[in-house]
Length: 135
Image (cartoon, rainbow, N blue to C red; front, side):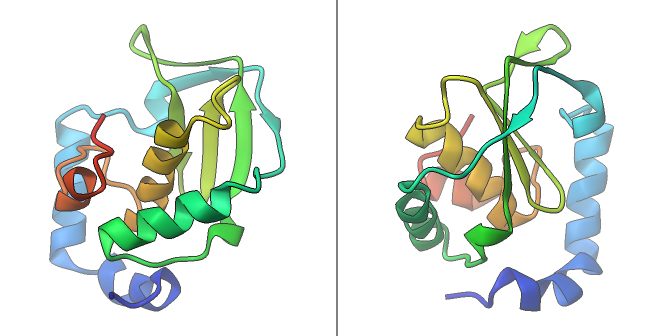
């Protein structure tokens, strides 16, 4: 199993691979938070099942982190370029889900995987397929 996110971030944050992935995402016009529009946003307390969702997402991805760092929000709409989005991850640990999908395992785990990875707007890393959480 890989080291926890808190310990990895210093090494990975400066790695050429990570910088290349982030730059590639920007050049490909991926949906970064600035390109998204959210309405009716309000915080909410994480559901009890999120602990299980997190554990299973760590297990399939081989990554580890701290679910307690995540701030949870729900929104009445999340859109980008006219497309509706079910969820959104924003650094460092902020997840917004569409109202009514707070208990939707696939949506929540998809955003959790963004948190474990530390981004990846292109969804090209192997963890997406390994966890069956591709967009």
